Image 1 (cartoon, one colour):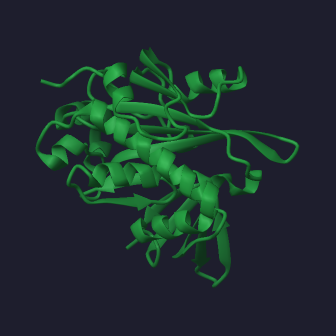
Image 2 (image 1 turned 60 degrees about the vertical axis):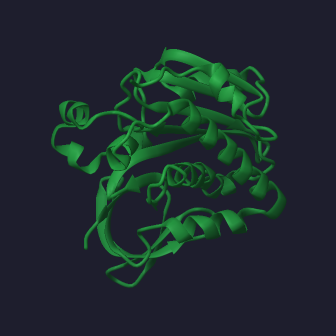
Image 3 (image 1 turned 90 degrees about the horizontal axis):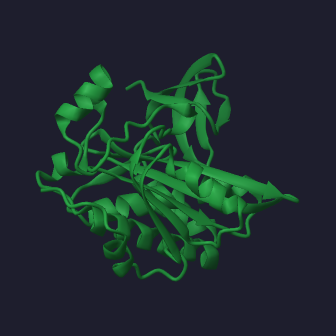
Length: 266
């Protein structure tokens, strides 16, 4: 039987210095990012967290809907206030996918990252994240790292909701062949966000980018890049210091990609 999300059980397992100062557990919201955005605009402190049992209008990158059914998954957003310039936000957002992969690995699975922040297990997407930020005077005011994790959602539910696209989606429980404790997973993820945020604060982006590159599955692969009504193919050279995907196109030109859809060609 899948256990309900429980704020007290999550908070009891938190050990971070900053993340989890204020944890709000909600039954259902349009999106956890939206709920936390309002709190951020009202001056909520760094480390504030919104966790929801269901999202009624959850979104991923490029405004794609994220299937967010109740009672089976984890949807969470974390508010951070790093003293970084806006250009570093894409790289800073890698903290969320690193925390996700660490938490998933602790469940005995082997996750990988597909730029920018999709997390795959056994070639199926099990989690994704969405970053938002606000800036003032060329400085970041706040960053929200939001994630949706397919924890215990079943294959049948994925097929019913996603149709043919369900072949590319999976869940942690499906891969692990057992139910995953959502409260323990949520707490582990939040602790790891805190850990990676502290590493970034003390050592800068270098260790974060190095760890992210170790888990990346796109470097060296041929891809199709789609965006702004155009498309081109090229080979991924890697990710630069600011979090941009670097692609060499068919003409040999280097292109930096921040927005767009990436599809494997090989």
